[in-house]
Amino acid sequence: MKALQKTAPGVGNVELRDVAEPTAGHGQVVLEVGYTGICGTDLHIYLDEYRCVPPVTLGHETAGTIDEVGPGVSGWSVGDRVTTETYFHTCGRCVHCLTGAPNLCPERRSIGTHVDGGFARRLLVPAHRLHRVPEGLDLRAAAMSEPLACCIHGLIDLAQIRPGDTVVVSGPGPIGLLCLQVARAAGARTVLCGVDGDELRLEIGRAVGAAHAVNVQRESLTALLDELTGGQGPEVAVEAAGAAASLRQCLEVVRRGGTVVQVGLYGRPVEVDINLVPMKQLRLVGTFAHVPWAWDRALELMASGRVLTAPLVSDVAPLDAWEAKFEALRQKRDCKVLLTPLG
Ligand SMILES: [Zn+2]
Ligand SMILES: [Zn+2]
Image 1 (tube, rainbow, N blue to C red):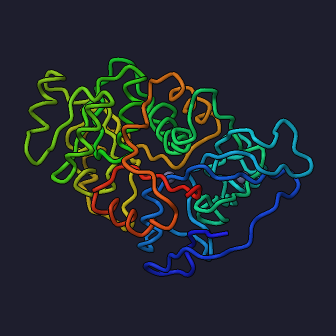
Image 2: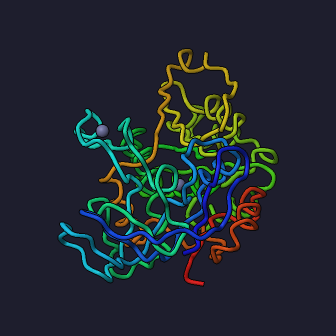
């Protein structure tokens, strides 16, 4: 079968090539992939800014249909519609595994970085990492459950957003647009920020419920926030751009005693004035990947219509269009692109 692989370390070295089809071993299933989203992480891997173990098939935001059930698997049948957590292997014994945080397991090996991922027709995964797609939710939406689960973990579990909070989301890419909707579903008032070139994404932000969507190069964010919060600043600022200027802005605008959530990745060290963290007594919260219980909430938020994903999906393209789509995403001409092996 054709699979989009990182073939060797270094910049580039990504190609669509023929690989052997997987078969399900003990406790495993093979999915017929429906859709797999292109993530910022995939772009970082292309640019050699995120660690992976080549040769490996990329793609970790997948939904599909069970095609083969291995021995020792119960509760799943061929034809079931599912999404999958990205953890192919965790140790099951460390303090993180034992406290429900497999994202922090030092032995964690994930699909799309360490083992073959979803940019292919068939995907091998452990059955205990599957989640059933609710009736009425399509596979395109279900493919967004991984990034949505990441946002839920960061904003609800870690930043602990409360009803009535004002939340600034800096960076209107797919992750920012999902964070925005999670904050809104949690009862917060939301302000989405972008820069020149983000017009399409800010417009999508308005369409999915941002109370305000601001190009900070054209309008004063500080003036808007002062007006909304009586000069106090927002309780929470979410850095979802992966840009140093965005993090500086978050540290500056958040209120004293507030929380900055670091979601974005930079691919390299960045320079900010960390003095603001003690001087303003900020909580700087990092969040990495997702935890199992965030998935059920992700699927529920999408099934109930409180998080919309269709407006974020600017294109659905065949696997062999990957190169043009990586470039379009890099240039922000697309928002979220799903690749499909279905042709
Ligand atoms: Zn992702
Ligand atoms: Zn572990």
